[in-house]
Image (tube, rainbow, N blue to C red; front, side, top):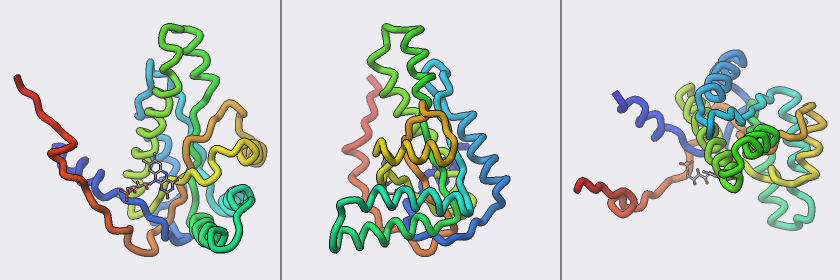
Length: 203
Ligand SMILES: Cc1cc2nc3c(=O)[nH]c(=O)nc-3n(C[C@H](O)[C@H](O)[C@H](O)COP(=O)(O)O)c2cc1C
């Protein structure tokens, strides 16, 4: 029964080259994101995950903001490489912005203080689960996506993103996922010997 799920996990790859087309309508994109947000587990069921689907002119606006921030201070070849990457991401069909709501995390930390030092790690763990849920579902629909942190942590950029998209200031960015129909094949990937990474202990 798990074969289909494991095959889906293997299908998901990082696609940097994407087109500005989608294989599914926006309504289906929304369904995928909502289902992933609903069913991704969170510590103590705090439901701290948040997501924003951005398409069309809004996606151009988002990547213009990211580019402005990410290109600051870059010169020469480094700048050329960054421009090429950012142009490719911004030229996709859309992006999913992922957040964790700090207000929810602060609330549980106040309610159950004995784990106070763990909540931010658990929140990050849950964010990663949400990322892969959406990423894998997109892959199954024939969409290529990647996980980007280019400037996702700059305070000034985040202030601009919150203002532009009218988001609560407590929503902390965990990643931005540009997506579209793949424009090429993903880079070759190598794997470490699995025997060195997974052990079975039975007695
Ligand atoms: C937590 C995390 C952060 C990542 N950040 C970035 C990123 O900022 N930019 C990027 O292009 N890829 C990023 N990646 C993608 C990885 O480089 C990629 O998943 C890895 O090389 C394996 O390739 P695959 O996704 O095709 O399986 C990130 C992946 C993870 C899990």
